[in-house]
Structures are given as C-alpha cells and as structure tokens.
Length: 299
Length: 323
Image 1 (cartoon, rainbow over the protein chains, first blue to last red):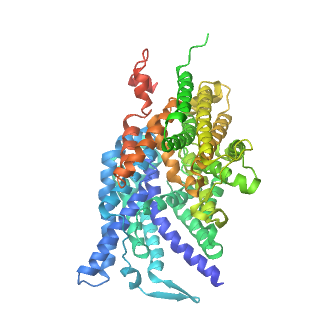
Image 2 (spheres, rainbow over the protein chains, first blue to last red; image 1 turned 120 degrees about the horizontal axis):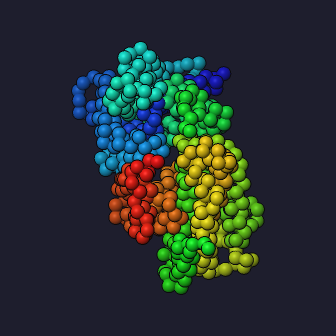
Image 3 (spheres, each protein chain N blue to C red; image 1 turned 90 degrees about the horizontal axis):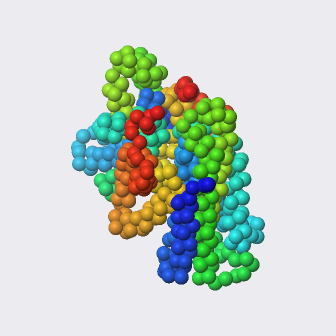
C-alpha cells in the first residue's frame, strides 16, 4: 500500500516537472511546427540563472527568505522571454518555411552552441540553491515523508495547465493561436499577423522551459550537461502525448511520470528503459501519439 | 556504352593509396584513420537514410550493436576470429535492422527522427544499467585472432588497418553503385513525394525498408571496426549526442556523394583532435555554429562546392529548384 502511494506521489511530482517543460515544447511545435531541440538549453539556463540569483539572495540580502520564491518565478521566465525573442527573430524566422527537419537540425545546432555558452558564462563547477527547498517543510502521508517543495510542484503544474487551457480557449490571443495551429496559410489570409504570433508563442514556450529549470534548481545540483539530459525526456513526453497538443503533453507527462516512479520504486535498473518503452509502445499503436494534430496529405 | 564513373575510380585509388600508408604512417595516424573509416561508415548509413528523406537521430543504435557484437562474440559465442567478428556484427545489424525496420518504415520526418532516437536511448538505458556488461563504463574487447593465428599487438593493428581500408572502400563503392541503381533513385523520389512514387508502380514502404536495413548493416560494421580499433566498447556509442555527431558530419559533407561522407568524417576527426586541445570549452560552440550556418546557407553540404567546380554543370536557378 505504501509502495503504491509512493509510486503515485513520486510519479505525480515527476510528471509535474515534465509537464511544465513539455507544455512549452508542445506549444511551440503546435503553432510553429518547430521541434525545438534547444528547449533543453533554455531549461538549463533557467536553472543556472535561478541558482546563482537564489544563492546571491540568501548571501547578500536581508529580505525575508520567502522572497526567494518571487525571484524564482520572475527571473527565469524573464530571461527565457528575452532569449526566445532573440532566437526566433535572429534565426528561426528565416528557416521556418524550409520545413520541420531543417528546424530540428538548426535547433540542434543551437543546443550545442548554448551548451558551451553556458560553460563560458557559469564555468564548469556545480551550483547549489538548496535554501528554498527546505523552506516549506515536509508532510507525512500514510507513513511516508514528502518534501512540501516537491508537492508544491504539482500545484504549480496544475496552475500552468489551467492557465494554458484558459489562454488557449478563452482569450482572443488563444483564438488567434488556434487559427494558426489549424491552418497557417488560411490564418495569414484572414489577416492574422502570424510572425507576431510566432514570436509570442516562442517566447512563451521558452519561458515555460526556463521556469521548469528555475523551479527544479533548488532540488538538484546544477551542472553542465543538464539540458541535454532533459531534452530527450521532454521529447518522449510530447511524442507520447502527440506533438503540438497541450492535453497530450499532460497525459504523456503523467504516464511517463508514473511509469518512471514505478520503475524507481520497484526495479531501479529499468528507470531509463521504461520512459522510452512507454513512448515506443504508444507509437506502435498510435504512430503520431495520443492526441495528434491532423495533417493534410501532400499530393 | 556506360559513362566512366569518376567517383568509383576515386574511391578505388583512394583505398589503394590509404592501404599503402601502412608502410609509412606512424601508429597513431593509422589508428586515427581506422577511427575515421569506422565513423565514415556510420555517416554513410545516415546519408543513405537522408537521401530517402529520413533523418535518424538514433544511428548510434546500430553503431553500438556492431560494437557490442564484436565485444561479446568472444565471451558469449566463442568467436575470436577478427573476420568472423566483423561478419557477426554485420549479421547483428542485419537482423536487428530487419526486425526494427518493419516498425520504423511506418514513420516519416520528425516522427522517424524521434522514434529512432527513442530506440537508441532504450539500448543506452539497458546497457548502462546492466552490471554484467560494465554499466556506463562498458568493457574491454579481447584481442582478436586472425584466421586462427594469435598475432602480436602490432601485427593485429596492421591487419585491422588494412581490413578497415578494404572494408571502407568496399562499402563506399557498393553504396555508390546503390545510389545510382533503380532503388537508389526510387529512394530520392520517395523523399520528394511518396504518392507520385506509388503511381510510378513502386512501393515507398519497401524502399524505406530496404534503405533502413542497408543503413543498419553499414552502421554496425562501423561500430565493429571502432570496437576492434579501440579495444573497448561502452553504452555511450548509443547515446543520442553520438548520433547527432553523425548527422552533423553527414550534413557538412552533404548527401550528394559517398566520398563526401568519407572526407567529412576525416576532416571532422582531424579538426576535433586539435580543437579539443586548443579550445576544449568551445568545441560544441564551433560545431553548433557550423551546423547552423551550413543548414541555413548550404543545405546540400560542402559537396555543393565540389559540384560547382565540375565543368558542364551550372547552378540551377531558384525557379528550377522549386519546380
């Protein structure tokens, strides 16, 4: 019983983290048809920015400790928005018309570049920002102890999911986005400023990736190579759920999160294996993922 | 009468010249050449798929399968002969490619890319967790026998070098002929438009399957050569950044000709040897920048430059390209 509880709660915590990263990736793909490999770098940059700011905050400021949470929610997404706008305007907008494979390769190039840029800025040493992790205390559930910070991640992910749903389905900008997702050319022809939609989407997606990095920073050691590890996980999630679908990213994250938690608690050797096994199994039965976007046939 | 094939002649002359190098070149260069040929074989396999419009982000899967086939042939199957081990690796690539190909030829574009990535990562996950196979460290490959003889290390190196030259040249020539064959042209047609290919009476799925299996065997042979050369294999061979490196070389060289893959692998390995010493922290930055520039401005790779030098060819205009 307590094993099952541990699997479910660990799985949900892991799923929340995966969902925040994957939702940004999926949003960008849905609107722009760009599978953004550099998403991992934005995640890593978010983690580095947060880790350095948080440790500066605790060492050099006399403000209350809870203020560090405000910092976490603002700093990483802000950096993400700036980087997103720069990358979209500077590189991607020239290449989007050349197809999905070209943009995958270009963003792979960007991922490699960012890996070294991160090392040039932050060096190769590890960063720790453990202070906020302990601030919220811990809770006993059914005889198991969980850190409240981790449990709060589930809440944050739920808020992100609801806000994304609301923004896509209940706002004017969401309507514009859905029009572009449905048919880009038709959207242009009815006067939607698609290039502006692209910048805003890309910046939002990158900000979500950076936010995930920032939120996870206190619970991990921030070291080089962080982004590369994460991006293949995020891919597994969005491909399982169906590229471009936010519901898909949510379902994919929960499935993969639970599968991984089950493996970690029962048979840790299989941890990496199950993640991709879930993805491969889904793809065998639904080649485009669970909630795939419709595509037209090219004659 | 058939036209004289310059590329085929160049491959043969190049192989012969490289093979004579065994008498003059120092040992470390010989070892580097074997590494280059090993990687070039995998790059060729990536090029095979790219010509059919498929980008594999998991070609390291077969690279790793080939390497582990060589490593495990001795302890598990009692195969110690070098040529038998190479044959075993090719067989392992053929069988796994034939099985996974059934699944893979249903996918296109980024779905193919992501699924191939997932398969390679599954193998990486399994190998890096299995303690019997040395987890993430991998294990050492015992020195192979040659035609039943136990040779000294130096002699084995010479045999490996000559085998690598012949294998590299042979595979390159075969693939070159394949590109010029009916199936080779059908692959290019499949990447352009599958439905039109169907109207011409060919099956795109069969074309993709054939290409996939061929690429799997070529990549396994590359992994096998590398295992023989280094005397060590590890799960890193299947990690996706390794596959990314192969894609990088394939794109920089271009998919126009197999020779481009060979030269691309050579330049890459040589530059890396020096760049890692000179600027270890900027290596990926250089790679990434070159990749972005090549993909943006020279989508057919550096081979475009070679082609434009050849007499009788002219640049196609933008309108011709879109037709």
